[in-house]
Length: 289
Image 1 (cartoon, helix red, strand yellow):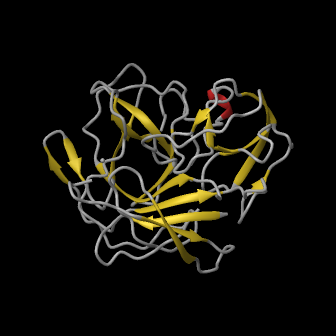
Image 2 (spheres, rainbow, N blue to C red):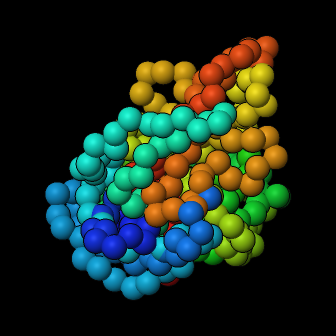
């Protein structure tokens, strides 16, 4: 897997490379930077598991952030200092400052259309067929050429690569499983660009939980109007939350990105204000070119 990685700009940040969490919660359990934080990204060619990645070229990051460099393996928590106890301000619980968030661009498919660096195509192959009449750029693509908009939400075909010929797609569930599903598609795919403001495909939180961006579905609610944006593992009913009309769930206003995490329920029940949790690593998808 080719991974482009960077750590959001903070003096003394170190480079990590990584290569995502399931996105289909049940109806009651679904799953921006202080001014001046301006990340830059560097691309990294990762070696197979256990090897040390090497630095490559620069790549623009998501809006406003400025990553530098980092190292590690997908799904492996990056050692951090103890973030300490959160503090409460107004209606939200604020996370203490911590290490800068790492920004990783995952390249799972080569220009020749082959799975790369630990990703594998699962059986059956092809996995199925998708109607791509409404194909569009993936909201989690950091480069042109990452597809979404094909099939139904249950297909989870929102982060996909197109092999040469544009008659098939290779779609990944998340950056951690390293699996790809091959779909035949109709009609033939037209090229797609990069979405204007990419949203992370997946997040690794400072407490080790993995969260994957939402792909449709009914997720329950809360009396404060917050909605589910990312489903998370970890054995709880917590998801990443955001206001219903917000563009993003991720606060990138400092070098340490944060998200609000809390439960959803049936019938919009009352819940305490959600705490802010630091994001250790934010994953995007990218093409090999």
